[in-house]
Length: 333
Ligand code: P6P
Image (cartoon, rainbow, N blue to C red; front, side):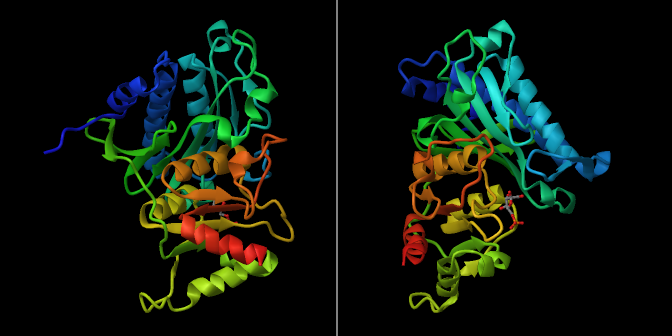
C-alpha cells in the first residue's frame, strides 16, 4: 500500500524547491487547504441546513448571490486575514479589493484573488462547483496597506494558483510553477492526500466544452470548430463528445485529465465573454500550462494580458494544446 502524503507534508517537502523560501507561501497554501475543508463541509450538507437558495442580493457581477457564495467568500477571507501571510484579497463576491489593516497582515508578502464558489448556479441542483485561487507577491512595500497595483498583475507573475473541486470527491489541485499536483480529501481523517502526482494533460482529447446556445451569437469560427468536432474522426470512427455542465472548474478538471478544450467566447451582447481574467482565467491558465496545455482569449495567452480592472472579463479558450491550435485556427481563418 502506498504511503499517504498529506497536502501539508507535500507543501513543506516541496518548500525545499525554493531555496529562499521563508515558509510564508507554504503556510498560505495550508491556510487555503483548511478553508477548503470548511467550505466542503458546508457545501456537502447545504441542503440539510436550508442554506440553499438565493441570498436575495446581487453581487458586483449583477448575479444573484447564493447563500453558499457568501459563506465561502467569508470563510476564505477570514482564513487569509487570520493567517497573516496575505496583505489583501480580491474576490468575485466583493466589488473592491480588501486591504487588511492589522499590522501582521500589512507585513504579509502576498495577495490572493479568488472566486470562492464558481458555478454557483449549480448549487441547488447538486452539480459539482469549485473554488479558484491565484496568488501573487505584492508589489507595494511590506508594512503598508495593499494597493490596487498588487492585484492588477499579469498572470505570468503568479507565484501559485489552483482550484478546489467539490464533486463526487473533493479535490485540491495547485501549482507553484513546478508542475501540477492533485489532492483528494480523505474524509475519514479530514486530510487532503496526494492522489494525482505531476498531472499532465494529453496533447489532444475528444471532449469539447462549449455552451452551444452561444454559437449563433459569437465568432462564426467557433461554430465551424464545433462543426468540426461533430465530424466523424477518421482515427476513431466517431465524432468528439460535447461535455458542458455549466461549472468551469468541473469542466476544466475533466478536460485536464482526459484531454479536451473549454471555450467561453465573446458574444454579441458580451464581447468580452463571461469569465473573469484575474480569478478564473489566469489561475486555470497557470495550472493548464504547467500540465502541458495552454489558455488564450482565442489569440493571446491570457497570462500575458496586463489587467486594467479587477473584474474584467475575457473570452476564454483553455485545454489540450493540439485542440487549442485547431480552435484558434478557426478564429484566425
Ligand atoms: P453559461 C458559472 O456561472 C460560470 O462562471 C462557469 O463556471 C461556467 O462554465 C459558465 O459560467 C456557464 O455559463 O452562460 O454557459 O451558463
